[in-house]
Image (cartoon, rainbow, N blue to C red):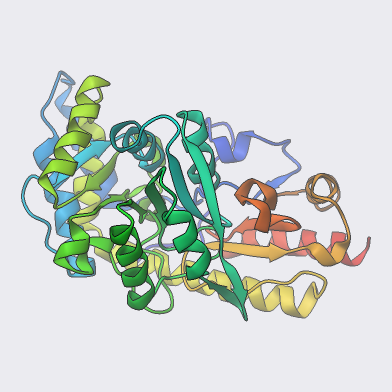
Length: 384
């Protein structure tokens, strides 16, 4: 079926984090939460489950595993073995659980920066040490500084690498060669890879390569996390899947789940399974719509807001805006967008030191909303 992503659902007054965080005159274009209604098949499947009227304890692991493995196979060409999937309440929760499972207090955890803030913050919140390797600016994107990365991986207390692919906020799709080199360096230095692939369905240029598909050897040294939350706008159901073909790794992860008494909800499993087995058409269409939105936004900024610099992302519906030419410190920059432009964006420094002077803009909204936000920003920047 054809989905109408130009339609704007009523989001105020629905307990939406995105729409309730700021005053009503501020347009929220910050947290990576789309403004699109999810696929009808998901709504129908959940409605059918609700109509049953009984919500007792349930075994949902098989449904979750079937859905996750089907998606990885049909979308990305990798067939995971039976028993290789575990539940997590979300990708961030999966990272926290992995830190407690596979690292010890005081261990170092490496992340490429700029990086999605929880990848930087969760190690410290769990008594570990976050170590960053800055990506290098290259034309309209980023590249890995492999010499610096290896130095960080080689440290005796480094035990885990948190990889975000596709990359948030830079919109980078790591190539097979880059991923192989990352994987080989981690293997060389006995560092486990946790690959956050939550944005895997929003790839506009190149191809998403799920980490365990790189080689049988590297597959044994990784965990992958996926979640239909971004693609299908169902983050509030708190259902993600963690996958590893290494029986020992997935068993240890499941042990931590059991020790925390964490189990998948029936509605969450139904939504994930439906999304990953019946909604490929929705994923294709929302990817194309947001791709066109990013093209429109980049073109608009280059033509109408030359003081801001950005690049066309290879993936994700997020734009990384270089606002350094405005000559403001980061607090002033945040205040400027909120108070003068009346647009809420994410502040760059929360993504690490390379985020200084940057802001992140969410394009996963109807084109009319995106246009209004860009017009507000243009009026504020050009009239300052």
